[in-house]
Image 1 (spheres, rainbow, N blue to C red):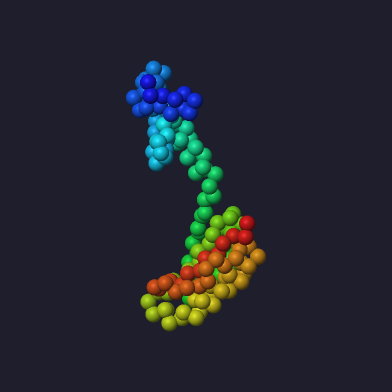
Image 2 (cartoon, rainbow, N blue to C red; image 1 turned 120 degrees about the horizontal axis):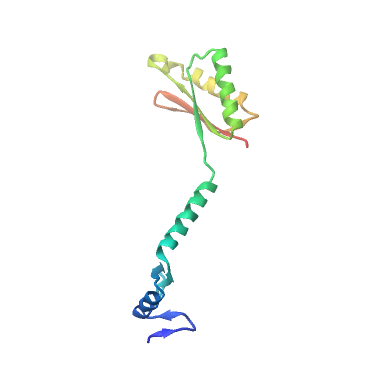
Length: 150
């Protein structure tokens, strides 16, 4: 037999025989190692435990929620304050807020008004969040992202 019990190194056929005797599977754990690392285990249980670990890691990872608020270049104070309250609630819940000014038709000539509204919005939300991305024009939208301070 080509086995070395002290080091745990076996020939492939001996390892397969050992796994078969124990009614288990021979699973290759690290194929890139020299020699490859294999274990004699119950394969279905091994897969189950791997899925369980992946699920646990996924559940512990932070989920970033991005809420979107859309304004116009000529948004009046009442609408501005209404949307501001929503943004405050989103930031307090720990979400990011993507604020954009959408320019319809020829309103694109009011780019400066759009930027002013976004900067005013950021200033009002200063105590709840910080600006992650300053206003930037992308096509017919000027977008700004605010992240929660939590």
